[in-house]
Image (cartoon, rainbow, N blue to C red; front, top):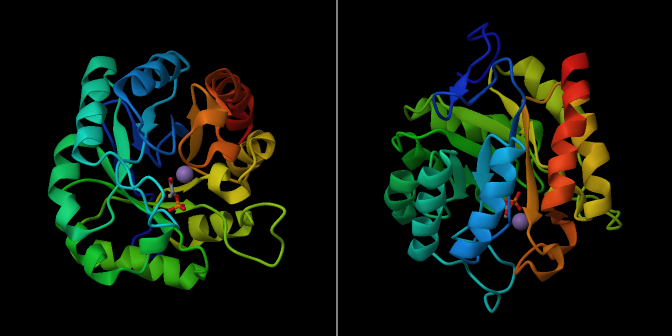
Length: 264
Ligand code: PEP
Ligand code: MN
């Protein structure tokens, strides 16, 4: 179902009346790694809505390496997302980690993110087939392109056609950057599937000073959008502080992407 040969068209995944992936516009999703407070999300939303950034991100269920690290605000965080979503008329994207979270997250979010660590959680993927919301499927941190496409296939074959693929870097031998951004995979996925493909340069490189050039490179090689982490006080982020852009840098990055997108 995911393959270009099965369906020789570009799938357009609609987030809201104005925002769709795979159409004319490059879609930028911005926001913090973790939802920390209403105040934080209001500040982010007001800056980004003006930028304009088309969708807001923020995790409320966080897949942390350590069980002692902050695990996310949960339902309270969903309420914060719902509040900024309606106040700023901006779609929101947030992660679901388990089948049990799908219903509550689908009630408040416009798109459900499946994190890298859950890309091959097959029961979760099957359940997303019936979630009734678009899915942002992130590539597993050590997954091949074939495994990535097959993970999408689980969701498609269980009844949900609205899948957006996200390249977010893969593990390699060099840890100077957090992961290695595989732009070749972006080009390949655009050729072999009809699904929209976006790029997460933040988790790919893990260092804020490397985010903007790779964001531009992603658009230049045909990505349909970007998901980028930013925070009102980047160094105070409760998670992924090292890669968070300031809101000012995020806004200027969005502006600098325009000529790149126009040239593709
Ligand atoms: C995230 O987007 O905050 C995240 C945890 O990403 P990934 O699953 O790609 O590591
Ligand atoms: Mn993060």
